[in-house]
Length: 390
Image 1: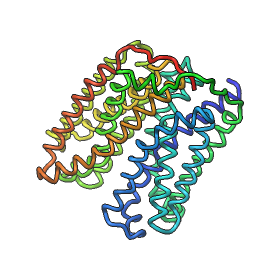
Image 2 (image 1 turned 90 degrees about the vertical axis):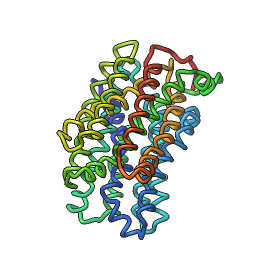
Image 3 (image 1 turned 30 degrees about the vertical axis):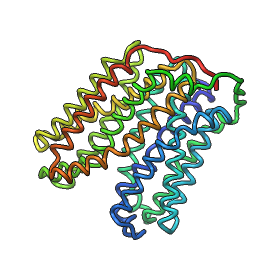
Image 4 (image 1 turned 45 degrees about the vertical axis):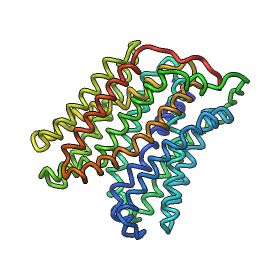
């Protein structure tokens, strides 16, 4: 393998690793952040809410940036802006905390949408393998950051502000590795049809968008409420936290393997349905038997959710005929999807408050999963979106 190929793969993988730490690294430090910044619990929760909303709202900027500057330079700019955002929120004051978080999330939104197009452009014959690498690095980045921020705080003695600023280091390293790709001559965009027109007219787009949005909703619901559900079922706090970590770690291996297998077939329907049914089984275990073999339900849930996320992104990369249309489909599916997902934890919290327990929220989650499986059935069928130019 040539040095250029090594830098390409390493830069791509490290860029993907930076797509979640700015978000996942907030939760373990949240109590300290609220106390230091004088925030209420609602104000503390708003940090993550603002970031997830930004993931949805700013994704549509990506095709415009990619058309003007190229996908490689757009990705490089995203890495630099992530570094700036996490550094900014470490400064004093609640306002810069929110501004820095929003800035980092905007960059992540652009990179989220860019990555499937990068896969299609740089690895056209290895879409399934590189999608697996991409998704596993995303999931791994979330798991690693949530696990290391507290130990880093203790080892360095920097406090949450210093640890937040340290998250800029891997982003800057990824930018350095990706720099050779961005410096290469970018293809000029010829005049021609815009990919959004092709994408928005296709029913495939809306099946994929529904799959992306609903699987994201069920993931963020569990991320937000799973420890609380286990606590109220009678498990100790440390065990509840370990169980959430377990389901996140299981997703790393699943998200690497599933795209490699599913990408070899013209239809991804069996995999999408299977992943949805495993997630249903995990939800049912949490609902009916939360204190009986809870680790088993977390493994099942992790396999189902990791596979669902990986498959949604794989389908985004496979269905369009060229990188420009991949980017447009990614913009629609991820932008609408993350807006849908942002309301999931709020809805579950509201249903918990109204019903006084977790039965109604979890039954609602099961209903959402049924719709997700139906959407995945249609999204997973062989289809090709028309060719368009960047």
